[in-house]
Image (cartoon, rainbow over all chains, first blue to last red; front, top):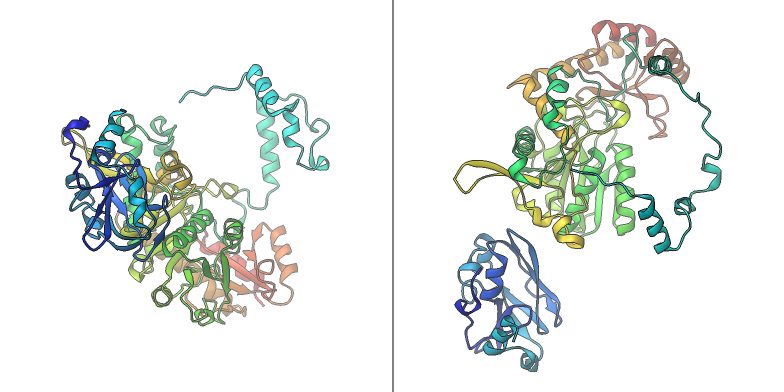
Length: 134
Length: 444
């Protein structure tokens, strides 16, 4: 596993305590994935059970499951939303999450109910401080 | 693995913790009249030799006890010959403890035997993936249905009345608490599934057919599996006599989504109903929803081939309440026996043996017909078929019992309308002489 300083956390993203990242797109949709730290902790990801498109989720609901060689982890969505599309490339290439967690390894695209829920999320420095236990 | 029993102190501590004064209190729910109050009525002590003699005498009271009896009983448990190599190899000390091989570094032999079992099952049933086995045929079917409800996210199933009646009881036990609706499809006049009774809906999680079915009849699996597909449901092909697949088209070749059933025929003794072997196989795309464990072949750090438990992340010891199923073990010794048995038959042995079963049972069937008895179902059968023994069948059955002949399974108990019908099984161990004698006895 890598040192936290060697991991990447883009400044433009929002982060959750459960190690998901969220990216606010121009059309107000949100891309969701897991952070570099999360993929590093999980190890080789071998399977992703993606959510159904159209699924309505409340803040804290299970979005999907990510299976690595070591464990199966539930990914919880930190905002209330509707799933509008999912990254079907992950069905055959789940390792995209390990290789490129913020780009090709995205999990789902969602439409938020209430944009103000983003205010409760962490930004890069806060998230890194949390990881370092500061 | 070391075993640590509870000490008196442990027990006292636990009882105190849950607030009761004796272990017996844990059994309060059992009606007192069913509990034994006095000591058992048995001799206080007896020497080993006399004890063995005593039990042999008791065993001798069974109709099917020695070479002087003929049994045509099948119905889910089949009396096949087991070559000596099977118990010889399977009772080797290396296999004595076939406990869960969690540590591949010390369990390569056990893991390889499971891998080979899975491979044999995949090849015989022409399925893509087989698990390391489940408890028995009935629990295997119940797990298959649970799997279908997980995949389809529906909770209605349609099952043929020609599936083993005891399997259907087990399914009820599994499914009743889950509020899963079970639709029973009646059988046709020819003893096969009546799929026209499925309502034209898309709510079905699974369509279940057994072949050869409980009456021994070979079902049209391709047709049933196609019907399942049209209803957007999974097709489950269950079996009690896998030896049939030495001769007839495999479930995989007929489009089954899941095939499951009993593997006792492959080298396991009848032994009063168990332990038996639950066979389970499916398609690769459903592997993550498959119950049970799976052994995979891989390479180690140095690139050498090896075997490991794979997809263990679906299992209870890792996923707890989110596990794929509650099955967290397998009948390893029974699976090992089946592998040795199948391997000992050689390349075409299963086919030859299946043909022998078929030919012998056809011989008896036609001899009974000639002797004036009715064979109610015209559908082709494998090594088991139904015969109508006429009005005085019950007297005849008992008379034959007194002559050490078991004239099959009386079907009235399971199918009240089949009053004088008996399910007859003929395997390779039944001789022509025995069949001729039986025909002479029952001829009208």
